[in-house]
Image (cartoon, rainbow, N blue to C red; front, side):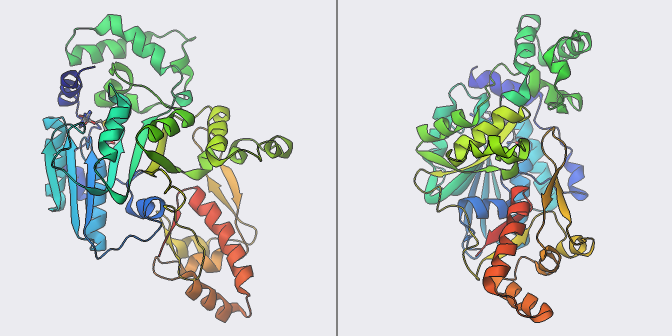
Length: 409
Ligand SMILES: C[S@@+](CC[C@H](N)C(=O)[O-])C[C@H]1O[C@@H](n2cnc3c(N)ncnc32)[C@H](O)[C@@H]1O
């Protein structure tokens, strides 16, 4: 697909459908790009909030990532700038209006291609959500972005995944002879018509993991009428990253990529012991069948271990995301479990440690593990560091696994 054709699609259907007036009542947050998550998986929790942060949102669409990051930087008092880049004037106009409604000024709006970044950057963080899989040459796109990274920087990307999109690609192909050469609105009308008339045997009708095309024409266009759309398995994504000199520091949320989330039989799980983390993730993807996209953090190859924050001492600071620690702690009974949602799966009950309640009551994004340990010991009597740390590690595994806890230094 040529860049012109791609641009024409997103001029007709800016994606995702957004109304700037909604900025008065809610902030859309998500992954990749949530700053606490980026800090954890790209900067090992060491993002210096006094230093200007240079961010590029490549293929910014109607602005979800740009607005979230710029708002989080403003709220945290982080200086710097978010550069928004997209081919579509229509998408950029919506993103710009959203920023105006919020009074966000540290955004540089640019129309252009991520394949031509001369004069832009270098960037600490590049966000590229839902874009690479639509390019004629995704590897060239990723190479272009990698070339604009600062040495200590990294990237957050989202690409489609094949198994959770079962049925999508045959319907895309079935629509092609029906819609080729027609204007976008007629193509959408024909696609809706075909959806109504699909036989009961069609796999898309049986796939519960893709549903947002029912909500808006832009979503339907993106799902079924895109003539350039290729999904990536975990292994293919790792190879794509490697082709640009990058490596996967994390796939999020981690619980989705843990074989034990999907298969309970200990004998089968034991057989996976020798696999490395990406092989295990690939196995979980194959077995789950429900992953329709991958959200990954990428850093220059060789830095993937060092990029991720670890709770290796008393100066690490746990940070909660979308979870009110004290309120959650009040409702916890001894032996409580955390209910975690898996794509398409039954809720997963994750065991929480005995001290989960007292810990969560005190986690506020500023308190270090050392201070948390001291406070618990003061409240409940002697508590060896190792005992405290083992309990914290269990809590961290449960909450980080489901995208609710990160670390900063
Ligand atoms: C599916 S939308 C995703 C928008 C946004 N990242 C999000 O997740 O909400 C893809 C966007 O990428 C833009 N795009 C596609 N190819 C591009 C390119 N080569 N350079 C810049 N933007 C591009 C499209 O115009 C469109 O707005």
